[in-house]
Length: 112
Length: 113
Image (cartoon, rainbow over all chains, first blue to last red; front, side):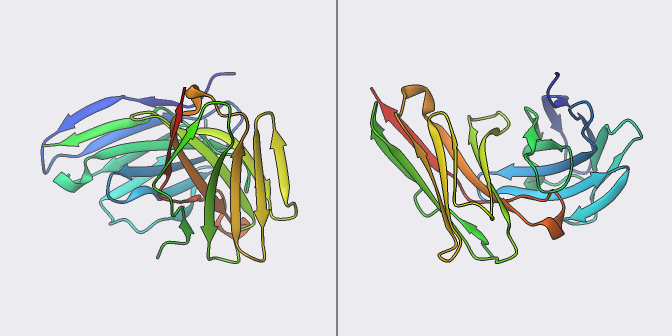
């Protein structure tokens, strides 16, 4: 069974640009969550999508958005990038509520 | 507010001995708890979980204990191996929050050979 796949693994963007990250969950998993990891803030929840609907949202500005497709693949978008958006972005896949979440390798975003 | 706390930033243990990692939480709605192991620049790897209806769960060398009255859980690794050296994160979720996980800050475990 294939694991969670995130693309790309690394990205370098300039301030003010926008970026789209992709996540393919484990086959059969309908829930995809996104997290941001920074040295200062640790692992912070961004949002969760379940059956193409956003079910939960963390405390991030509206520049951070996401969506989920009918095949459960998910994308997150960050617009008007700031230096502070530099982080490891992680996607987690789950089957139903309150169960184990399995993470992808992450996308390392660097904003210069 | 830090709803999940791992108060020990690091822990050093001799190979073969027991490693005990601790985690405290404040939100009474949390009913499911997980431990993850993480290497730099990689995603967390799921280790073991426990539901709030249990007080212990074992999987091989890993055992998680939950004390609901104290809002405390711990991960025991026996025996510790050098390959266990990594950052360990405690995470909590609540049925009402869907699959949202709230993470602690992590504990760096070093197992010395």
